[in-house]
Length: 249
Image 1 (cartoon, helix red, strand yellow):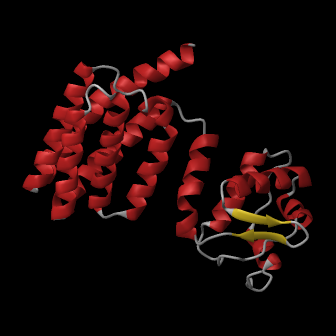
Image 2 (cartoon, one colour; image 1 turned 120 degrees about the horizontal axis):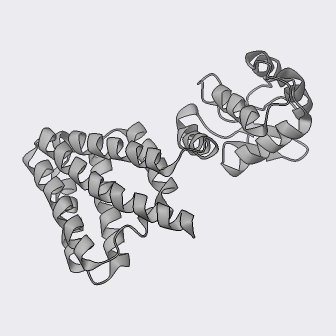
Image 3 (tube, one colour; image 1 turned 90 degrees about the vertical axis):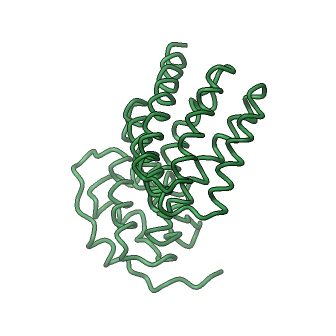
């Protein structure tokens, strides 16, 4: 069993503020995550016992227990029977899980998520135009080529499409931005998998991706952002229509 930092239960408890009586589990989880991602706790720090957390937050032990169980599923804490609950990673390690949880319990609608994804993708394209390496530019070209070869096999087409965006994000050179985009994409994946339905839509997507690639090759940040904005308008419209159809079922 790995060694853990000294018990900081009193310090952690002091950092937590009392929640209003009857607060839901999600509020308990949010308060704990605010503490975990504040940068003051080291990985492996043991948390106060459930009873102490419940008293500090002025909530029932069941709310604390459920919140910790949810955070364990997300990989944020490690609950060890007979030993205690421990923080798994650093603030930066926990960022993607925290974002995912916050977006899920925030009940954001699909249109808001699509707007967020569009803004992130456009900024990624702008950064990539000035930062992409020769290998990354070649990988973008290869993804577009695979898309052209896969118009009759839309599963392979979607895979090449995803590879294009992953390469572009890596070329942007901003890890936090990539984390944000990964979370948003994963939450939209149920619709993204159905984004292109036919050869006509595939051909349009190919041309839009090719325009982004050409702008990145030219090192033109404004043109890359503009090309991505045009692509996101088309893609978001398709995804929005798909989400509406799925909700109507």
